[in-house]
Image 1 (cartoon, rainbow, N blue to C red):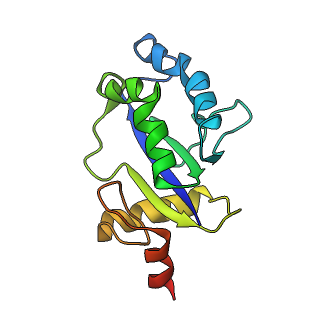
Image 2: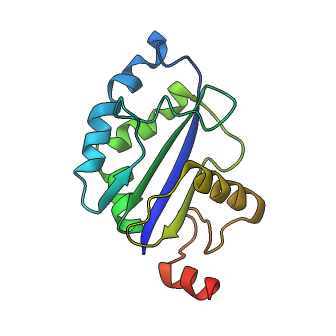
Length: 152
């Protein structure tokens, strides 16, 4: 099993606004850093190389990021132990607070590429049910074994 993740953010500004330029200008380097990180498998992107033009919500200021990793530790290492961490620390400069869960993790079979619809269903499930083996956050410690046991 591999780990899929979706995270969403509501931009305070249009992505072509000068106030968010530093974030936008660093999308390519951070995405490349992810792709070369240990345990990276796949990430959602369109023809431009990122996912900022993919509209998963009615609100055009909500952007999505989705990827698949070999493990929770691989994803955590990228998020919290690379240059990505520096941008995560500054997210309040560029993004509004989302009062509900803004990210979700879930287990997928090896080779499975999740769809946006699947990811949004997982996020909604987490919002409605809290952390479970089916959809969870970093606060929980659900393993692929927990997921498989629940599904059988």
